[in-house]
Length: 127
Image (cartoon, rainbow, N blue to C red; front, side, top):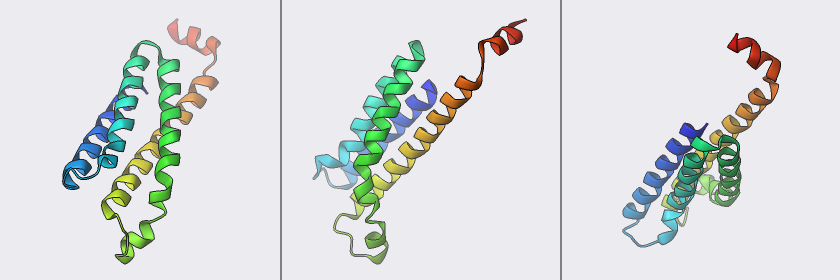
């Protein structure tokens, strides 16, 4: 999970910077995915040393990001109808929402697998 966290952070940083550039440097809110990405990247680097702390923190950040982007995702219908006020914001928010949601599913799945793997199985694998 630490490497996935780092890669996701880098992807979000790039997405936010591209959105900022495409918006003509007009709206700093286009950098919100980059801010989330930078925090996730930092959590991923922490997770390289302390997996539980880093990944748990990253999942909290992902949850906040999903909650924060949800309102723009609801405007997808307006985007397809051509009446969205801020189409770029809807697109970037939807991309961020989907990436963070997939990350959360992978993280929870990883925790479930780690929880099911009992210490007795770990010692048996070492022998």
